[in-house]
Amino acid sequence: MNPQAALIFVASLMLGTTITISSNHWIMAWTGLEINTLAILPLISKSHHPRAIEAATKYFLTQAAASALVLFSSMTNAWYTGQWDITQLTHPTSCLILTSAIAMKLGLVPFHFWFPEVLQGSPLTTGLILSTIMKLPPITLLYMTSPSLNPALLTTLAILSTALGGWMGLNQTQIRKILAFSSISHLGWMAIIIVYNPKLTLLNFYLYAVMTATIFLTLNTTKVLKLSTLMTAWTKAPSLNTMLLLALLSLAGLPPLTGFLPKWLIIQELTKQDMALAATLISLLSLLSLFFYLRLAYCTAITLPPHTTNHMKQWRTNKPTNVTIAILTTITVMLLPIAPMILTIV
Image (cartoon, rainbow, N blue to C red; front, side, top):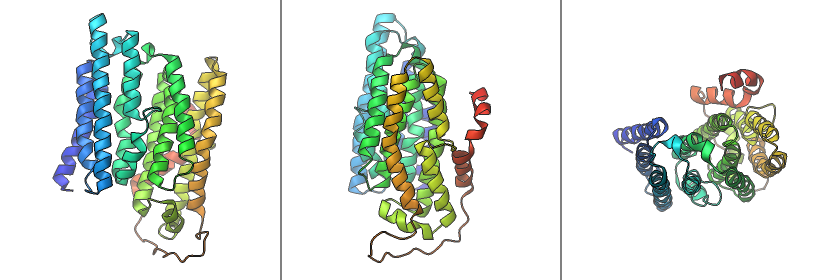
């Protein structure tokens, strides 16, 4: 892609995100979401592969439907209350429609079908943007309207997302699809706590974004897209592969890695809110996704393919590891001991 064009699209993404997260009026928030959608489409379809075009089409249709629902919910609220302010969303029907619209934007169950397909059709760098930056504006809208949202609906969506995100990722061999189902599962953890402690949702999102960025950038460096390729990629950059293993375990939420922090805090908060049953259920369902993280980690750690066919071994690269990956990996692996400091900031 032409560098000037890429710069314009990335700048538009930043602009759309900034407009949405800094606006008070529903129309401005909707404008930011639309700018975001239009800016990411060329980045998804830039390879001109039929699957990329299909992914861009699916993404456009779902996001357009979700944006229409956002506009509809805000107009319904304005009709009944005379308020266009985002924080003044008080009408129950509007709240219900908005929750559905944001669930569609984020890829929460039952509106999740587009996300794995779109991620599979996109390049790794675009996949990273879709999994992190593109989730920020909808989560911000949920954060701003959280006092008015229906807790029972969000808890149901969250538990279903964690269940289906873990269950559907079990049989996948394509790493981008596995990461898509992992994203759906993590969104479940964010959705369950947004009504009770919205700041915890944001903390969870930030840490999830850092861990996902580490994994996507590492895979982009070693040019790995499938589990079979991951098994032979250890020869390229052994140290990077070792850190990828730790990053995957962190994303799974195992102590003493960073990924354990948001899960621990969310379970603690749910227990305080007398939701011990929901906390137990979501913890048990996250074991499903732990299985495919462990499978990825196993494929990362394996030094030889488990079957007899001769694989071409890649030559080891002498390129130094990117500083960005080094910093992100450090944060992904080593943030748990400074949890008290993080909590004072949040």
